[in-house]
Image (cartoon, rainbow, N blue to C red):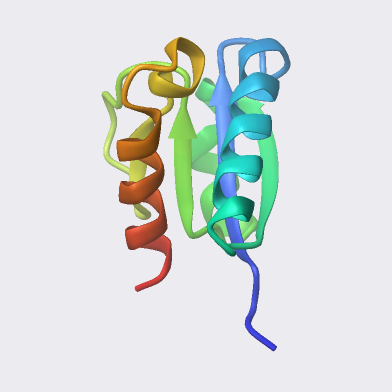
Amino acid sequence: MKKKKKILVACGSGIATSTIIMDKLKNGLKKRGVEIELEQCKISEAENYIEDLKLDAVVLNGTVNSEYSVPAFSGLSFLTGVGEDKLLDEIEKEIKK
């Protein structure tokens, strides 16, 4: 059985928009046959979670202004609906490596 990939979703408060992004990310990847585990936090806390949770990727509700030790993506497409499939393609490709 394949190990589920872990993705951290972060927003300003760690609650509101990250919940929307998590839902679209989980459902979008599930339709593609990719099962994931999701964690949620504030953007300011993201760096601390990466090593502790052994994450495979980070999705933020804004632009990616910091470098992380795992692939990081802007999740704005999940909020606007513009480019959502392309973003799912990029995330799927990265976490399947």
